[in-house]
Image (cartoon, rainbow, N blue to C red):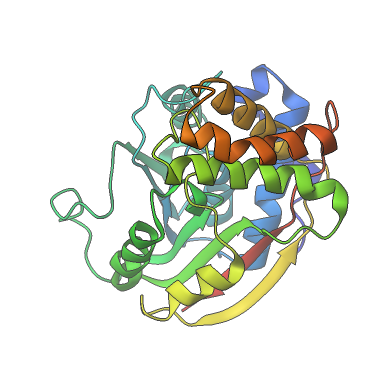
Length: 281
């Protein structure tokens, strides 16, 4: 599948509410999502379930890919008021009001493991189920495993993307340390304010797929140079640590990680970990 043309990236960027605050940042994020979708070969007319849609960065690109005769059901456990500086609700409202709106159904406060909430979803309802850069937000690997099993009857293809925990260069270690520290804090029961709850490696993810009924058919690394996520996660990690009681067990456990992070991180423009895309059926 060819690269998304620059004019389409520009239009998709404009569709996002966050572009009003920093268009350059949103354009980089949108281009990355377009690269992920290119690997999954989502055809016009496809029906897509997106789990963990957040502010809709991926949703917009998926809606563009499925075309006017396709549909995206974008769900997230977060409430519409979640997120800063732009809430997920405000971002969804911006997308819904634009030309992509008729192709998208946003549902917030929606848990795919809630049988009552999902009672209307029949087996085979979708061509693809997408989880993109959201698996580390799950509360546990068990919750992610249950989600992968739950959505298995609903779609023919799983489209998955996440950061790769193995840094290919030393300057990506600060991003790694920031996500590992957030995962440690969550394990201690102090994950409030953190993005990451359960960081996992590629091998750990692969181990969940088979028991959930999925078989990997393609997997590839994705270059991420220019993305701002490392800086964001480093800032979140520091804020999270600052909110801890200094003499608490979790603060003492995280102190070596934070010291190393402070020693290695740049003031800004820290390179992010690479990502990977996976397709399973």
